[in-house]
Figure 1 (cartoon, helix red, strand yellow):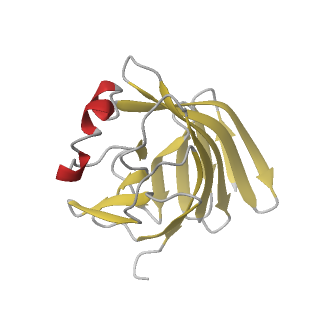
Figure 2: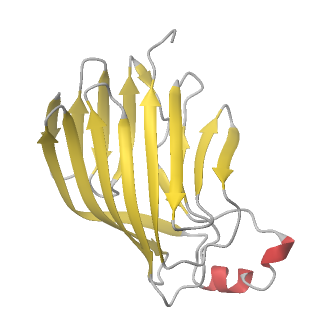
Length: 196
């Protein structure tokens, strides 16, 4: 594997893949595998969801802290080659528009020689913020994308893995309350060659 980096981007290139990691966001902007751009937009960390009648008591708090208008930033990104893999470690934060930090995330991405992307993320919610409506990593997949996703969460109760495919939103989650101040999120993305 070839690894090139500058102040803002890390390029990881294998035999049939080319991945572009954004050092400012701590997420992938582009995942090219076997000639197909797997995602049509950069990855996003998402805590917002459609509101329900059950949210009547908390929705004012969520809007007050602007959970519906967030952005992610990364700092202290370290890139290392370890054996046949590339490891990218970042400290990330999710903040709402003009208010304050909501989450702190310690992330470890591992890209293996076959192009499999693994993520381990430790998430900490700042205690002055209300419970989260949701938590997920949003992938805007191309219609031709052939990527298998495996995600799970430990020590938390409402974590979702979201992806857009053919204009539809697929979501897998344990729909409970996200009250914990700290939880772990794990994800594995397995791209496939054309015809597999």
